[in-house]
Amino acid sequence: MSTKKRKTERKNCPADVLEEARKLIEKGQSKRSVAEAFGMPESSLRKRLKRGEPATKLGRYETTFTEQIEEDFCNYLKLLDDMYFGLTAKRLRELAFEFAVANNIPHRFNTDTKLAGKGWLRGFRSRHPEISLRQPTSTSIARAMAFNRPQVERFYINLMVLQDRYNFPPHRIFNMDETGFTTVPNKPSKVLSTKGKRSVSKISSAERGVNITAVNAMSASGVYVPPAFIFKRKRMKPELLDGAPAGSIGMISDSSYINSDLFLDWLSHFKDYTKPTKENPVLLILDNHVSHCTIRAINFYRDNHIHVLTLPPHTSHKIQPLDCGFHTVLKKYYANECEKWLRNHPGRAITVFQMVAIFSPAYLKAATLACAVQCFKVTGIVPYDPDVFTDADYLASSVTERKRGDDNAESATDVPLVDSGASIVSEAIPQTSRSPLMDLTNVGGPTNSSVISTEHSAANESPMQPTAVSSHNTNSATTGKPKTIMDICPIPKAQPRPVSQRKHKKSDIISSSPYKIEIEKQEAQKKPKPKLKIHIQRPQTSKTQTSKAKKVKKDFKKPKKTPKKKIWKCGGCREVYKEPIIEDWIECDKCKEWWHEKCTAYLGLGSYECDVCTHK
Image (cartoon, rainbow, N blue to C red; front, side):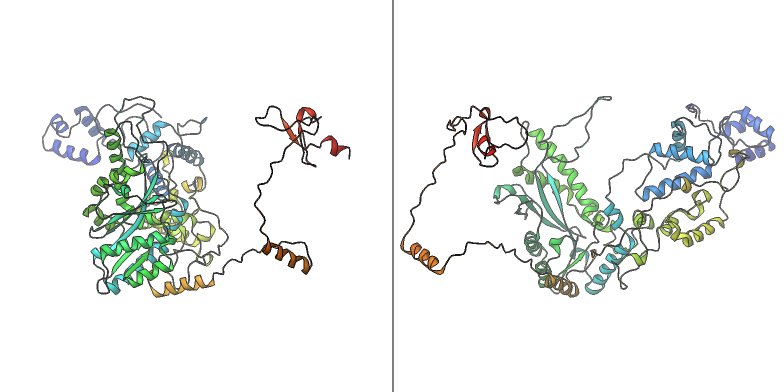
């Protein structure tokens, strides 16, 4: 591919411009004035009028693929990106080469490296500016699998049930979550430096930081409950909360993480600030952590008129309002405050006693009304919008999707599972942009053939369906059906796995009576582990001996004697063992006596037996 770049802004002459110019010339205007009016050279206009056809391209070079094929590449890239399997620039160049070879398309790619050139990639990106090279965020497989339509729909159904029953206003809907902070922020902010410098460094407190946990809660109207801080300590000190936001509380644990006891303390703190009553209850949305679902916590919810709705597991990055905006902004401000503190206190390191004072200004900047309102809006909680997530958001879960009969986690009363990964993938591609090159026959395996054939036939019946490969880009030797992009690089699909007997967690109203009864049954079914009894065999004695021994113990008290220190002597030279050790000693494996190593014939390999034990 040529690396020559265009130096002029001259454009080709489209058909509508050529027709308009011809009409103006017929009315009596000169060709030079018409050419100046359209911003093109007069010679180019004369040439096009003489040929009678507009210019279809600039220069003698043609693109390797047609516009439709490149459009299919764009749709394929977007599809894999939504499934969290985005292609790298090198993999796209490999795919372009394989596609050209498989369909006998003339190309100028390097046959030694089997890659499309960097010039082709640069031209492809310039022709499709919506495609760019981005730095992805690592997403765990658990999150990709868990964020599926049945689990999310179950959450919004439970939310609708609570709203219909209690009609919570926005200022009575709260979200609670924990997040960690360290004395060494994970991602320092960018700094100005010299171009070409090999490494750019910035000062930090230490190599590894000290962690604390901040428990935050906010409402859909912008009301914030003062945070609670959990320190990794044995004793709480008042100076740890110096400079904290007004109303904050401090707690301690062995790991700086929350547990069931600390969560009950936080619930009391939450109740004091929200003041829920029977006439004015509170809705609390939180995750499925084990400390939130204990019997003691459920009884506290019910006694204090707090209705609790849990999120589906591993979906907090999408549905939890605090994780969808507030914590990101808070940690960014916290990193900036750490940099300010280090600049104002050169030569000192941030310790746990300064963390809360540094956290406080960052919290005051992040805890705004607009931030809280926007976080609840993008998650579809307030205002209620169960359709906030589209089919493209569920594409990542289609990779590990199973049929209805294979999943025992869902019962007949639950929301139905999605049909198949192929249906989601098909719906994610616009109907007008599908072509035989974006065939879906490889998506979901043979079990989804009925769904795929329906989608494929609908795509072929579309009046806007273009041809797969144009005539000027194919050889005459090309026979049969052309290979598609899906044939060369299929959509990822996980293999079937054995069904797990473990009961999976879901979104539930854990303050309700059915959930409490179920938890109580589970607690009752748990059997305490039997204690291991160690049986020690003692020598049998007669009754008279035991009675005498008891009498002796009652009549006399044995004086406490300090055990005599044993004196070790060498078995060969009879030299007494003294410290500090000057010569090496070795122990006999049988009689357990110690010898000077030089007094033995030991060679330094295997076990040692002294001369006395050897001649016995």
